[in-house]
Length: 422
Ligand SMILES: Cc1cc2nc3c(=O)[nH]c(=O)nc-3n(C[C@H](O)[C@H](O)[C@H](O)COP(=O)(O)OP(=O)(O)OC[C@H]3O[C@@H](n4cnc5c(N)ncnc54)[C@H](O)[C@@H]3O)c2cc1C
Image (cartoon, rainbow, N blue to C red; front, side):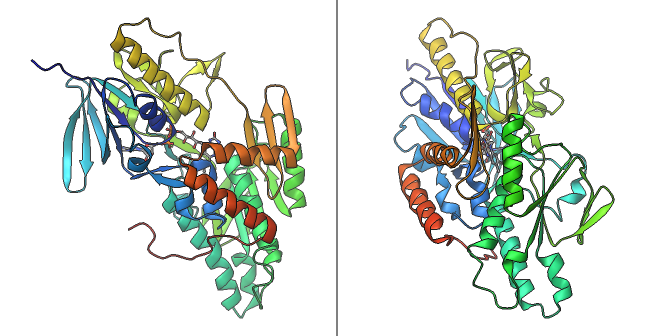
């Protein structure tokens, strides 16, 4: 009689799902990784695709390719729509097949987050968010098209709305996007237009918080804010947006006319909590126990941005390191259980530090008691991001592109592409 090999189903091939699958490479299990996209995406560099520094293929890799040496792993392109916890199976829509059941012995949910417009879904039409490669290409199109339209527009009174860029949200993505646009208009685009001066573009960063990059220490936020101002970015803090429409945004009763508004403010969790009918936190993330399993379901783990876990009285942040460490922890727990070994101690996040880049050659870094801003922090930022790209070919290609852009000011991918996500 053949022995049943345990099946571990992983939903999501992002940072959490991929690190789980990699850590199970040599385990005596069958792994089935399901993702609605065929690629793993390095989200921290999405803003560089949106601002034309990198091409989409430089920050995304086929999941199948990354896991080609994991012989126990099958990759399925499909959209998970629900979970039958009693029957222990996930329901998947793939191509023309609806509601296909895939059974599991262990389930890892690593489905990340989506945009949240804080109850104002009507903003989405005018202010796209940045979460996927398709979003990044759409934003790139929007930014580049604004300059093209302004150059073609003979009436200078219309230039103002076309050359004003508003970023809603002064977290890392908003700050990185705003500063990347500022560098682009003052270097890359400088000599290419005849009727307009790209450097005259107005870039506005809006947030209801009182300082940008609020998760960093105040002195680092201040350093970032000074840098943003040096780059010519208007930083408007202390007020959220009242409304967004096709003419721009209204902030504290003041209308800012703009044809390009970008939303970088909020995220909402995936529907995993609903699928499991499990307890969630106020943000909708699934509350997990200290071993990352769901209450009453020791066979179901939730990791990464979809999970909610407090450490030392504070919720863990939605960052790549948390997702990767949780993925590795979940896989080690599964292995211990299968091998009859004692379970590891509860999950504990080891915070290696936070980084955010503010334009060319400047970043802020906070790691334990270390606080750094400027070129050195930027070099650390560059090294860390290169290290965590999924494949060595991407590391080489991104490194070469960065050196080229740094030295010449030229960007790698300034294409307006109409049908980008077929
Ligand atoms: C623009 C941006 C910039 C960021 N910058 C940084 C940074 O500088 N540093 C940092 O540490 N973190 C950063 N983050 C956060 C970081 O990317 C996340 O914390 C991390 O990706 C979380 O990993 P995850 O595995 O939980 O989810 P993800 O990496 O988002 O992966 C989720 C996966 O699940 C798949 N999926 C979702 N729903 C389904 C479904 N129903 N069926 C099948 N598949 C599904 C998705 O396609 C995706 O591949 C950034 C995020 C964004 C959006």
